[in-house]
Image 1 (spheres, rainbow, N blue to C red):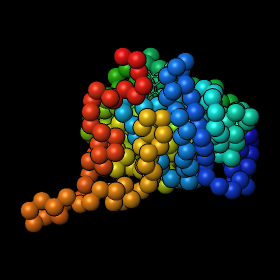
Image 2 (cartoon, rainbow, N blue to C red; image 1 turned 60 degrees about the vertical axis):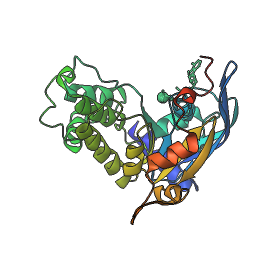
Image 3 (cartoon, rainbow, N blue to C red; image 1 turned 30 degrees about the vertical axis):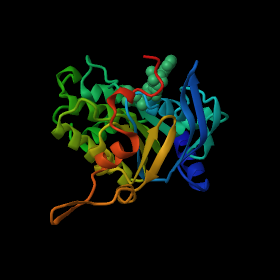
Amino acid sequence: MTKQRTDIRMTADQVQGPAIHVQGLEKSYKELRVLRGVDFDVARGSIFALLGSNGAGKTTVVKILSTLLKADAGTAGVNGFDVATRAADVRESISLTGQFAAVDEILTGRENLVLVARLRHLKNPGRIADDLLARFSLTDAGARKASTYSGGMRRRLDIAMSLIGDPPVIFLDEPTTGLDPQARIEVWQAVKELAARGTTVLLTTQYLDEAEHLADRIAILHEGRIIVNGTLAELKRLLPPAKVEYVEKQPTLEEVFLALVGDNGKNRNVGTNA
Ligand SMILES: Nc1ncnc2c1ncn2[C@@H]1O[C@H](COP(=O)(O)OP(=O)(O)OP(=O)(O)O)[C@@H](O)[C@H]1O
Ligand SMILES: [Mg+2]
């Protein structure tokens, strides 16, 4: 398994181009057209945030990229492998942390990590577990059952588990939903460290400040398409600075988002029949 992973990395290094390439992606659930031609690229080693309201299709994109779901049309490549024709290679290249934490409550934090390392047939599962506990500031909590962890600790453990095997690309679907501000900052720190080590991170979020703090590039998914994609500075330039008396106020990402998407709460669930 370790060798295979190394091979995947070598292949990745040989492959030119972005870590994630998405073009013309379409997906419908029966009559509901969720994705209507989604295009974006994610550069290697960068953090890319996919923003969108509830039901915009963020999880659908992540599921297609992680080979859990087939697209109706378009192409998607991860780590140089086409998701439709090279699904096994894509799965070797990624980890997915879903919208809901997947830790085993009955096991301790360390046991959770050892279990995953064993399942992946890695050598030295104990050492891998201890390294990850240290990296995610969970060493002291390592011997405690995960059921006693706070939301932030559980999320960090979940992300640590997804890193076992050192995948070059990781998907985080709403990594901080439901966490308090302190726990969110802890998760952000962990995500930043990942990118600093060269891992490519695609995260989805509904929190605009999360995208503001973390992402190198931000894309907004709305009505089935990416309606804007750029750095925070580029997105802010889409709106003129608002003059407030004598102080020039830059628009926040939230203002940019609401101006582009509209803040009509009734339209938030794109395309539902409700
Ligand atoms: N398996 C399915 N069958 C039918 N409809 C689905 C299915 N999965 C998702 N949908 C619908 O597709 C739309 C997009 O869902 P998706 O989960 O991708 O949105 P999301 O952007 O991740 O939303 P959230 O922010 O709430 O997580 C929603 O309207 C949802 O109800
Ligand atoms: Mg979702």
